[in-house]
Image (tube, rainbow, N blue to C red; front, side):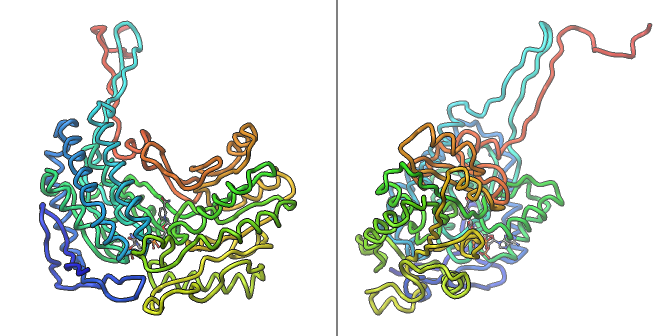
Length: 497
Ligand code: NDP
């Protein structure tokens, strides 16, 4: 599949980078270049922000129902072009087509429809509060202005949609920067928005690495930054935004605990642990990488897990049977392999499955790609580096526990708090445990599903604010409260005595 070069996008059309500079997008499955991507200079970013500022004046005044109609049309266009877009996502990110074709575009379009329905149905209204017979307060919600979206590389178009959908639905305009590792979707999304009727300048795209992101974050024309990425980068972005009192949403990393209770259905728990570690080749922020298993069930859990590992199938990414692709970049492959070696050599965990090296039976034409094996460590302890740090790859750590109180305390003993989950057949116990877990996204007898209706966001160092759900739109508006007094006189302390 030949992919044309990607440019920048503002003023409702593609624009070449003024510097003439480009960088390459690489196919992670083979390490071959896919196409050139135009690299934004500061002048290009200024131009994109100026375009968004001009568009804000009329888009923010466009009736919500008209905005909703355009976003609905964009969702339809995305669904119509699902397979074509998913193919490019697979080439760009390495994720198997069996996954991108049913998840990435679909769950992005769902969020677009969700927020189109919400604002089109009057869901952005404020409230009224009757204070006295002759006085009341009403509130209104106003868009923020030009907002910046900065995305990670694991769910490229989905992240772009999870940010742009509520942003545009609420009447803001956006300048979006994808990860330099997965930039191909952004121009396509901008073109789809334009085709759907979005006015020029409402959604804009700039490409580049961290320096472009940093320039966007500190730009005085920007009202808000919505960021998805690592905790360390998020700290820099939030710090820079704080200097100018910009609004921020931070969707950051995790090291999430998955607790298997003594009464859990073991097959369900093993399936959950596999989804929580090997889906998207382990490159999911909410991964349940710390799998807590009762000591008495360790052997049975591991036996069932080993029996099921054959169903993780690395292979050609467009083969419908493949459900495990390469990692997204060579730099990330090196990082994950370094963690696997550390687990074996320095942490001295027991390697139950996988390890360094290529997946077995991987065809020779893929050997140059950024592949790792799905890997399981057991006999892990809380102090191990592989148990403490986010690896963001397909590396599961099994830890044993003796009491549920102990499991919960150890699950919470981390500076991160993105996700957590429990597998049990006792619903009372499930809710009791969930209530004690320090995490913003939790599951009972399930892992990973994140529908448009569900607000998601991390606790502790895993983030600030939420995306999706009714609460997600609040991150894109500011509140105005108005007190109306109909008594005919101002309540004053300055009247004559
Ligand atoms: P990074 O933090 O490396 O990068 C994220 C984005 O920030 C990229 O577009 C990057 O550009 C850009 N960037 C880098 N430096 C700066 C800077 N100083 N100022 C502004 N922007 C900057 O994260 P990854 O791309 O490696 O993504 C993986 C991480 O994302 C994991 O930690 C994962 O847990 C987290 N994540 C969180 C999610 C959530 O919802 N909580 C969802 C998905 C991922 P470039 O890469 O082009 O250099």
